[in-house]
Image (cartoon, rainbow, N blue to C red):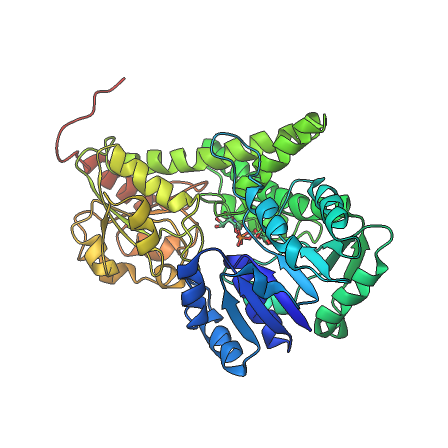
Amino acid sequence: MRLSVIGCGYLGAVHAACMAKLGHDVVGIDVDSAKVASLGAGEPPFFEPGLAELLTEALESGRLQFSTDIADAAGSAVHFIAVGTPQKRTENGADLSHVAASVDALLPHLREGDVVVGKSTVPVGTARGLSTRITEACPSVTLAWNPEFLREGYAIKDTLEPDRLVYGLDDANSGAQLILDEVYAQALADGRPRLVMDYETAELVKVSANAFLATKISFINAMAEVCEATGADVSLLADAIGHDDRIGRRFLNAGLGFGGGCLPKDIRAFMARAGELGADQALTFLREVDSINMRRRSRMVDLAREVCGGSLLGQRIAVLGLAFKPNSDDVRDSPALSVAAQLQLQGAAVTAIDPQAVPNAARRFPDLAYATSVQEAVQNADAVLVLTEWEEYRTLNPEDLAGLVARPAIVDGRNCLDATAWRDAGWTYRALGRPKAAAGSAAAAAADARLIGEARPRVAAEPRA
Ligand code: UGA
């Protein structure tokens, strides 16, 4: 089939390349000429494992092209709308201007029988409005809403092997269903579930899935707060409750909480939309989910201050990890970057590193120092913070690092390190939601107490309340 994909960000670029991989003829369209040039050269403008190879393969097959000219969408039977819906600058609601602009730009190029397929995450009610707009201009064109559930870092797999396909359709457009079945013939042949529903439910499936995931993470982080107050261990707690199939262990990793371009803005837009619909009470719990999540970042700064002996002034802090999660260079609303910036603002001298996200982080926070190796980042550090659980940080050797730092103190912001191994190597190990020292380990507790007690501010003491 001939397909166009309007919007070539994380979602659109991956979707376009995957559709070409499936044998379709695809044109990806974006207003950003630099992005189009780089995608056309087989170089993704962001880090996504496997995407460079997939783009190259698809471009070489001749089935994938990129363009800045929306007129190149003409002739495609299906037009995917995959543009961004970021949070508005001063409000919680989603900014739909890119969706509206891309549909308007597409209208003059639509042909009889074309199907426009929305993939962007939008507030419930958007599809019905767009459908009216499209059918007024082009009566034989139909709109389907087909939300996407891909995760950054696994975007290709999630697109080619989706957990489920969701088609939001208007009552009368069964033709669109057949066309979507043709687009996704491979996934359907593989037995992937396909759920057909109305527009509103399809829009809600997307945001409620993200709201559920955010709630699950904040639930375990709330338990982490209680654990901190009692000396209990949230990792053990998560393991234990996760064995119950009804709860499940996935997305129960306590730590710095969620960030990125989706979960935070989606729950806020969801609350804003519920308010407009008079259903705000139903989602007030999401405000708490958001607050618990943001509190984790402040708690991390507090923990760093604690291991530095009560003040961050002049303390040299090594930050390992800046991306909002591993296998990504995305720093949008990244908890790691937010903590690094707060530490610096509170007087610490931060040296940060990330396997992929340094250029994006440096654009946002040029004042942080950025290292090119872990060894360089931790040199003479008073505290080392692991804020994104990249494999290479999870597997660091505590003995190797101990000789480089000024003070062997590590704060595990993602509960991803082996606490015993670090403590056995002489480090003070602290983590969110976990006790200061493993139960029964008096030596480790003494080491923690001694090291924290010894820590002294390097420049001047902060005024104490
Ligand atoms: C999320 C959803 O998982 C996807 O299903 C959805 O399609 C996507 O948003 C979207 O709406 O486009 P993504 O933003 O790539 O995907 O990231 P996640 O893997 O969901 O992680 C989100 C954040 O939660 C990260 O900061 C991660 O570190 C954090 N997290 C995740 C935790 O703090 N604990 C966990 O147990 C899991």
